[in-house]
Structure formats: structure tokens, C-alpha cells
Image (tube, rainbow, N blue to C red; front, top):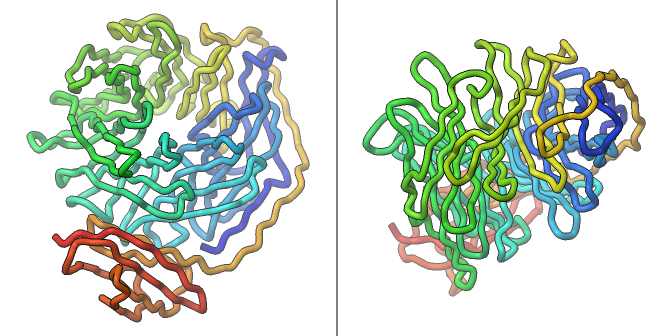
Length: 491
């Protein structure tokens, strides 16, 4: 991918402040075109990192957007990363060394399809590493979690691999994000996807999304349990359940309760597009302990994010819908024990706000999303910082317009990227390259014997081994050589 690392030289922040406290404020960060915030985390020094996508600042297409703010919401720096087409980041982690890892989607590696995209930067947003993973069709990355082994578990959706239409996609990358050590798909021939992950300890993870069970065509909430064996580096889905009835349901987030039980949250809708906020607690066998569905405003809408808030409290971020077009943020809480409603409040302009991510902090909450209600123009990143009661203390609105000059960041790199991986589900060796020139591919077994050779311009090479075992692939293109060692089974 031909890349440009761009620190936004002109940062336009159009926002409003409720008081001067760093524990209760709301701000909009606005450009001249659409900008979206999809995830937020608290950083090690006490500020916040927001990721999403931006089309502002003279960009031809949407690119990954990183926005670093301090605890009071003051911008510290912002950067965009992208190729010639579309990029977006859906989830971000900060590692122990302060660096950031994002997962999302790119279409810059092909002529129109999408690949899962991993991006790593330094603590100050300097580009360090990228990896794109996918087949000949559309593939998306939605969430990432670090495992106790230092490897990374990812969740998303794939049209390239699996069983028919879109399938739920899970994969594990090594500690350096350079090798896929495990991947699998869940699908029944209809549409399936995983939106969210939660990891508990070193041996257990859960994924939640949507899918159709073999018994029905309508979409249900889908949840999977993944067993992890760090010693042998093995990963296994031990249970998949579909949660729903005659309506259409799906999950956007999942939290683990520490005892093998989980709570999943998302939406339920009927054939008339009446959507309600749906939260479900599941025991260790994925049987429902309780299910809570809110259909009446302001609780109607879709739950996008949930957080355990201590004690018997689960907090959630949803969109409250006044009609088919207008919506606001809704921050609410229910009891973990029985799902009963505790409290909630609506935040927004009453026009169009799109919530995405909620995090519980030591003193309150931070919620991020997008809005075009306050600016009456393109979508902008919107951030609410509330106290534990979901309130913002001073209700006087102050409009702030700042232009902050930040040093421009340029990144120069080899215009050709050559990456290879083995897609075990499709029995294909994927040779992804931004160059269209001829590639030479050699395949060896562990004894050094050549078991395959091909000269091609295609991105995918079928490989069906005669014996199950470890193989080595070596690819040469334009003087660049890359290689991987992979496991392939005889099917």
C-alpha cells in the first residue's frame, strides 16, 4: 500500500464546554468534511485516544483518524493514515510501552474489495507497522484484544472465507503482528459477524455478534466461547449459541463477569424496523439468566457499548430515537443481578448523534461517537465526559473555535508492500502486494524439498498438501523476498 502518514497540520476544534472541570465536559472536534469516532480508551498518562476515520483536511478518501486529547478534552495531536482508497479504525489498544495498535479495514490493497487492516504506531503516533489480511472478497476487522501470552485476538467479518455469505471471523496474531497463528470462521450460509471480544485471564475469551442458527433464517445474537492453551499455543471454539426469538437480534458488545458468565448487548427489531435496546445475561452454559428489552423512548434504539461499573451496576451507551431520522446519546445503567433499570440520561442536540464507544473511568464515564446536529454541517467527532451520575455540571453552553498548528508529519517508505499468509479455511496461500508485477512463489516441506512453484500476478494460490504438516513459502517480487512458515492439513 502506498501510504502517507499525515499529522493534520491544521486542527479545527469546534466544541462546547460545560464548566472548566476535567471530569465533566463535552466537545466536538470538527473538520471541513465527515469525521467519525469509533473507539476511545484512557491512555497511560490520563488522557484519551480516539480512533475512527476522517475525510477532512484535503483528503481524497476517508483515512484512519487518531486524535489524542488530555483529561480536559484539549487536543494534543491528531494524525491520519491511509492509502489511495478507504481506511477506518474500529478498535484501539495501548500496549505497555505506550504504543498503539488499531484494527479496522482498508480498500487500498485491491481494486475495490476490503481487507482487515492492522496499524501500529509509537506513543506519539509515528507509523511503525501495518498488516493487511483478507481474500478476494470483502473482509472487515472490528475488535482486538491482547492475550496473556502477548499475542492478539481479533474479531470481524469475512466474505472471502467460510461458508457461503458473510461469516463471523476470529484470528490470533503473533506478538509482532506479523503472523496469523490461528483463524477460523463461524457461518451457516447466511450472514454472520463478530463485533466484540472480551478476554478473561490466560485461558478464556468470548466473542459476540450476529448470525442465523441452522434452525431459522432470521438473525439472532451470536456468542462464542474460545478456549486458549498458552503452553501449546492452541485455540478452540468450544461453544456457539444463538440468542433470540422471532425478531431480528444482534450483539454489539460483550463483557465477562469473572465467573464464566457474560452479558451481551445490542438490538432487537421487528419487520417494521422498530428497534429496541437489548441486554442479555448468560450463565456458564450460555443459558439466559435474564433478558431486558427497552422499546419505549428514550430507551429505544441500539446498545453500542457496555461497561461494568462496579458492584451490581452495568452501564450502557445506546442511541435514543425520536423518529426515523433524529437520535441522541443515551447513557443508562441496569443491575447486573437481574437486568432491572437503575438510571439514565439523554445527551445530544435532538437532531442526529451516533454513539459508538463507552468507557468507565475512576471518576465517571467517557463516551465517543459522531454528530452533525450541533454544527449543522458534516459529521464531527463528539465526546462526552460525565460524572458517575451521567451528568455534566454546568449547563451553560460555550462555543469554542480553535485553530491549532501542529508540526506536519511525513512518512516515506518503499512503495511496494509484500505480505504472505496461509488461509487454512480456503486452502490458499495469499500473496498480497501493492505491485502488479510478477511474483515467484516457492513452497518447501520441512525437509527442504520443493512441493510447489508458481510464477503469477494473482494474489491467491491454491495449496492442497498431500500430507499434514509444516511448510515454508518463499515469495520474490521486484527484488524483495518474504517468507513464512505455516501449518497445513490434508483435507
